[in-house]
Image 1 (cartoon, helix red, strand yellow):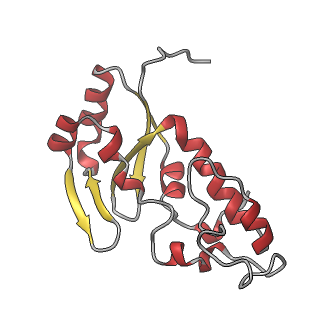
Image 2 (tube, helix red, strand yellow):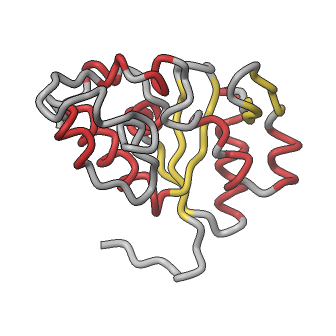
Length: 164
């Protein structure tokens, strides 16, 4: 087991297919978010979907998004038909996370802020800057792990094929 200093920032990064660039997220919440996405994707009925407990993300099938009267508990549930997912609002764009977790000077040097029409800003970090950026983060005491599958799951890629 790797021990790390309690103040060490742990990041997971990878190639975000949707934007063809690198994405960076907080490693401490990434696994929990992924579990919540998988749990919702595995729900077979609206009742199951509503019961998915979420602490990191908002449940896009929850009562604040859908009237229970319209979607009976036993009605079949398909995550790919959820409005928030169809419209691209859930889960939050994974490439936007770099704006929260990367030091500002490194954002300025290695990335470019891109404004999307519907989902706000994200940081476009070109793939060719990977080695240098990861080295710089290491110099500053960041623990950085690459996991493309996790990054793309958190971006909502291929949700229809996700199974718990």
